[in-house]
Length: 165
Image 1 (cartoon, one colour):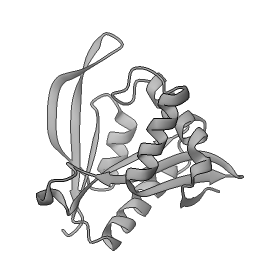
Image 2 (cartoon, rainbow, N blue to C red; image 1 turned 90 degrees about the vertical axis):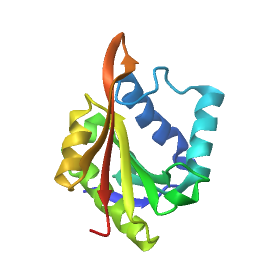
Image 3 (cartoon, rainbow, N blue to C red; image 1 turned 60 degrees about the vertical axis):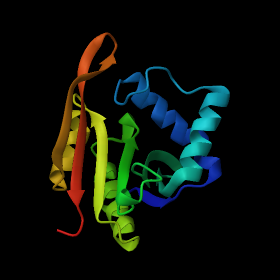
């Protein structure tokens, strides 16, 4: 059984490990793995800028994480909109972890009076697309062939959901 809890600083290496697996699998826009000072800076930025950062544990091991971050920060027109992100260790997929993360992050967003969540992802990330669709997210934007991953062009997608609807 998995357990969700607020992420703490000591989770940084495991959250970064999971992110690096996603990078290696071409599941986001990063093309190089996060290492050393770059990894530390990436996690510190994520930790400090997340309005909600969640770690998922199974038997005290971190197997996933999710976050809510500002969308277009510093632009008041978007104050009621956040970006939702979630990552699961491939060894722990198909156990409902992604589902639990989306549900929990939506609940946290509602507590913050957030009206809209946006997920930004690559067009070949079918696991995340299917998860988002199962939670009533819709494709709101598609930039054809906007990203190049391992020499192949892939669409850049925006999926969104109005929490107030």
